[in-house]
Image 1: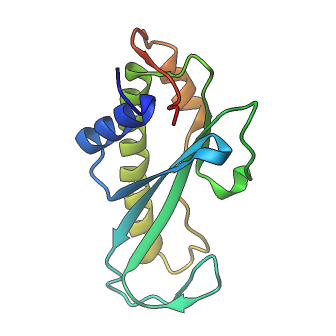
Image 2: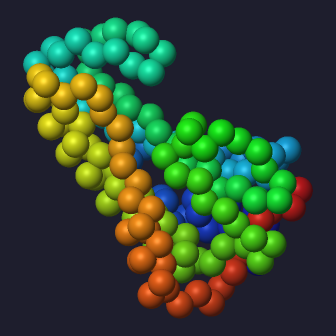
Image 3: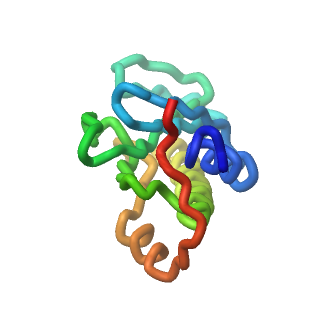
Length: 155
């Protein structure tokens, strides 16, 4: 059994199946785990862009987004700070779920990178953000048969 429960499995499936730079942050006090990832794009047209903090730049783009795994009974956070917020129960999360999550995140990030390139090439585009299709994510889960569950880690 993994020492850090579903964190170990999550890291393993992301290292195997997610091709972008990512970082995991275990917020023990908040019973939450954040996964942040980076999309990088060349700003070939030197488009002047303003980021969320209001900083303007025409450099290459490094876009960061994050997902949080949280305990509905114990965690507190602002959902607007995350691309997606995924609850877990006392039972934990299954390897099958986490593998599916990594695959869905890969597809979302790939689509996000395509959208970012389109955004950079389109002078009329106002805003860019990665999309997380909650409906597609949920419908993909319906066919999942889950067997191995890993609990939220104890420390």
